[in-house]
Every structure is written in C-alpha cells, then in structure tokens.
Amino acid sequence: MASRNNSAAGLDALILCGGLGTRLREETEFKPKPMVEVGGRPILWHILKHYSAFGAGRFVLCLGYKGDVIRDYFIHYHNRSHDLEVDVGSGSATVMPGPTDSPLDCKVVLAETGQESLTGRRILRALPYVKGDCFMATYGDAVADVDIDALLETHKRAGKLATVTAVHPSSRFGELDIEGDVIRSFAEKPQVTQGWINGGYFVFEKRAFDLMDRNLNEPLETSLLERLATMGELAVHHHRGFWQCMDTLRETQLLNDLWNSGAAPWRIWS
Image (cartoon, rainbow, N blue to C red; front, side, top):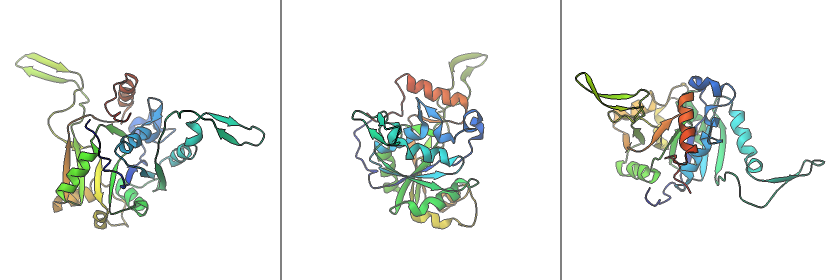
C-alpha cells in the first residue's frame, strides 16, 4: 500500500460490536463475535490495528450481546499484554520492562447500546460519545485492506452525508467457467467479480442521523442508508482489494489460515 497520510487522525471510528452472531454459534455461545480470535487475538483487535495504521486513535465500541467480555478485555488489556511481577500478598502488579505482546495505542469508549438494539439504534445511542461532525464506522466482524485515506478522500470529494465502501465478496461456492459441456476453468471460492455489496467501512456526517427516528429500533441498512440513497446523499467508495467477513466457522478458519501463513492481506501495519 502507498504511504499513508494519517487522514483519520482526529476522527473517531465507531465499531458495531453488539450482534448475536447466530451463524457462528460454535464460538458466540460464549463470547460476542468481535471477540472470536484470528491468530490468537480477537478480530476486533485486527480492526482497531487497521484503523490505527491510518492515524485513528479513538474508537467508540457499540456493545450489546455479551458486552462484558469486551469490557473485561480492554479494562485488563494492559496487564494481559505485558509481563508482570505480582505481589501475591497485596495483589499489586508491576509491569516489567520489555516489548508488549500486542500493542494497541488508542482510546476506546465502551458504550452499552442495548441487548436487543438493531444497528441503527446502536449508533444513535453511541452518537453522543462521538466527537466532531464527521466519523468513521464499520462492523466488528470483517477485515479488509481498505485504504482509509482513499475512503476519506472519496467522502470529502463527493460532499454527501455518508459514504459506504462497496466490495466484491468471496463466493461461498466454487466458480465454474463453462463452455458447452466442458468446464474451461475452476476457481474454488474466488472473489466475485460481478456485483457489489455493502462492505461496511462507512464515513458519516453526524447530521445524517437527524433523519432517524430515535423512538424506533431500526437497522442502519434498511432505514438510514436507504433514505440517504433515495435522497442522493449516499456516496460509494469502490474497494477492489481484500475483504472478508466472519459469519461462519469455515470463514473463521480461512482468516486464521491466512494469518498463520504470514500473508494476511489486511495486515497493513508494521
């Protein structure tokens, strides 16, 4: 990736972390989906590292289902990521000098947004914690090599109330190139080249949420985003690189395999 301009510095990033994750029940019975691990660390850690690489230093986490797991992770993060000397008698702990295990240099707001809240209500409830008139947002269950500098430039250039990143998803099935009765090529779960889907990685002007009814429990996608699109106020940033959600155990394993191979496309930080 080209050198970064740290254009995200000064902007908050809001992460949706409260869903049930029912399609990944093997993991989410015990933890929220953003805490499912990729390479020994929660996928949420990877998302924060990605944004931090572009200068983002403050995150608002919209908690819901099993939010206490996320609270505990960050409250105890410093001690978990350093070597410690513990005085068992007093219970005090001293951080030992040396490198940290998984450094994160950021601030997080742990915002309870309701067990049953849909994505639109979650953002409305967390919005008072967002500083500034413009902020970034994404889901807590997907990783990508999205160029945040380019995304913010798209938003600025378009001058709309919101910008959504469009991605080509990976196919859940092998793609066949058929000619007559003969298969000319076979690609096992390739990235789809036709059609775009919502990949998250949003930029919003805060005033866009004046269009939502605070008394309703609505999904972001079928309320605000549809309204903005109808108004011509929803810009698009096309991302042709890597993007992968983590909806199933198979996708979780795919992300772990990529990370463990040392060739994870979303690892754009040093």
